[in-house]
Image 1 (cartoon, rainbow, N blue to C red):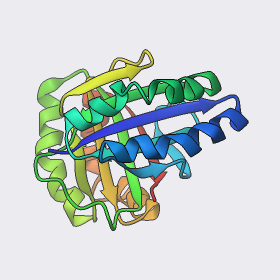
Image 2 (cartoon, rainbow, N blue to C red):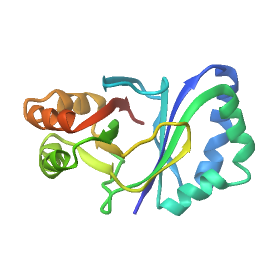
Image 3 (cartoon, helix red, strand yellow):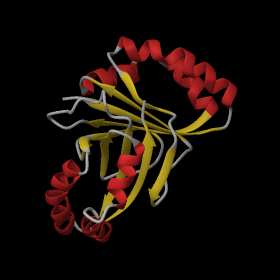
Image 4 (cartoon, rainbow, N blue to C red):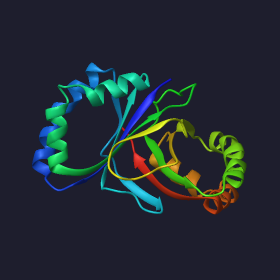
Length: 198
């Protein structure tokens, strides 16, 4: 089962961050990780989102993602990022039958605080069919989530892949999704962002 690292950052030293960007890919590759999002254009469509830059890494499993975070070689590189940005970072389990991300170039990321479990289950049971019909596929959906940096407490993180950011936006605005969106917003507080992938 794949795992994902989501990093949401507010940059305050762009020059130092450029150094981080040069150094980190080798460590990511060492742990069989790859970028699926790396600083693409983002659009907040619900609530708010911490930061102005998002990166998402895909790893073959949770232990590989955790080993990346804990790698002693990564520590001095991570310090560059910490000194050049304010970061919120999470690790999350992916779905069991992970779709191929090769043709995904737009993503919906969401963090959700559920306040009505029963009503939210109604949403969760119905949304996969609509998601598939409108070109989306879950990469992560409420699996185990661990906060690595930052202070946001999350019930659930969702990552959905689409062929493009426009396709993701069209899903979110669609008449087909609208009744389910109403259920979700009644059952939870959500912060949703659409991000351009690689």
